[in-house]
Length: 224
Length: 324
Figure: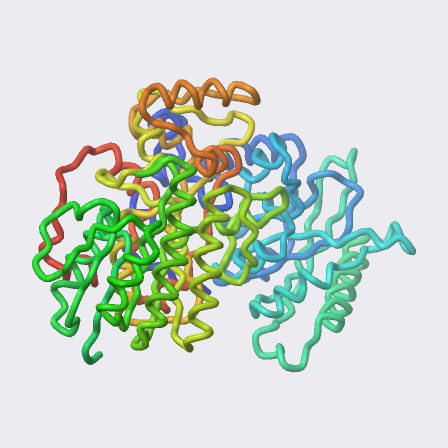
């Protein structure tokens, strides 16, 4: 975890004021905060409630996301655009932590716009930098062509970075494909990597993550 | 350290002069010798300055050989449109590096090399990491980045041959009220161009923090690269608003006109600055505190605000203030 010197932390108390006039004043004066990855906190504060109005997301088990330090949140594969964005926004609102999401294309204007909302390309170097800085990042499983409707398969490279950074891996299952009016996000118990780097390899971590996500999915499935 | 002798190339610039001033105050440094095409910006008390064109290899080698430096601070890296045209910046950087570094090694007493490099070496190719750390393999995409990478390679090769530590200080774009910087000049124009399709974030570094990094690297030699970046970021349109300037959206071929207008207004836009405006430029500077002991680096938004203040020249009379 990166400990930020108190002197270096943003000291602008006005930055916490989320009223319309404060947001507008910061936008005109240029004093809004854009971080190194391009995340614009003020823009998110305006757009996130609108996204929740369009399609609400219910989060179960948000307390399982670590309160401090890095975490890699992995969710099952979805044939739904912007699923990671929706999970990140919902988890951010539920935990109060800035939550980022991967899979952003490096093409303007879509890429820069998604970066403003907390997106990052699933670039292993950037992921390593994010986790070293103590950030929470949401990534999706890739599609498993043998079982297209299954949970999908995690990217071993991504899990390898989490292992290297000793970041816990938090399994998440998403339920509710549009046009279902509500999206459900079920968070599972984090898979710790800090004390297991010597014994846990990427393949084993991938298998454990897939099992946990599949269990969450099964538990979330409505029973007859 | 005993009998430390320091050679500073590029001593005539703002950074070189400031580094020399701070090192002068250090009693453990026996001798400070500087070279540059231009004389130092301020009076130096102990340092000896030689006015040498960096392209003059023989004279550069002779001055360095006479000093037998234990530390080479290679600040003779020229940013395009900072003090030189792009073409002469490349020529001076390459020739000065090839002349100074081997000469310092051959003098026989060298213990460390400190190089002024930049995060431009990482490049901003499509798909490149947005916030590269020191483990990312350099892949420059602009002329200045290639120039810096060449200087790094020359220093690394010489360092490995001589078995000395080579500290590569990869700075974010250095700006400050009194540093000749193409980005600083552009941001101070009444109207500042930006890309409305991207307006990506970039980080900068205050001149005093760059100077403090050099002094720290002289005192704590480290073999490897270190990113030195002001925490946080701003976008071009945000920087314009912070300075009370008018952000002007520019797309596609409009950049050609914007560059011509900026040049006519006295702020030519080199390739690496245009790349910064279109693709952004930041880096992970999380290791600098542990390696160089620099714990208080000015955040990027604060540096940009300072740029617009037109503050008085801040003479470095008290070395403790910056070296802390």
